Image (cartoon, rainbow, N blue to C red):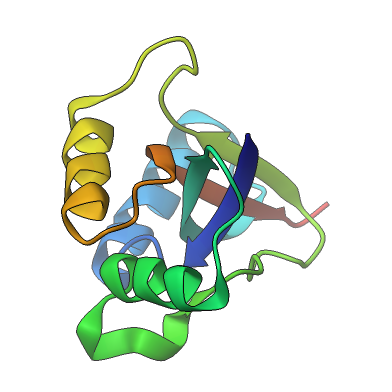
Length: 126
């Protein structure tokens, strides 16, 4: 079994990100000056995927109107506090079940599980 990671940025629209920043500043710390977000797709496979299979999987997961925002590397590389929020690993979500079924229908039979998490980079003014 292997685990692949793909990332899509931003995780939220600018309006959602602004609202989240305001809540974090009020409830956590006013020193937090910025939040960057992305989605992380954690993909468990039973065997390695070929390049064509990885391209098909990427096509399934990326947004069609922002294809360049999807990559196999995180965009949250600056300094700050990185938080990742997602499902527990001891059960599969309904989203995972549907995503895995779609992959199987497209011929990606090696896909065992896909889970999506949200990643937040909190930048504080210290």
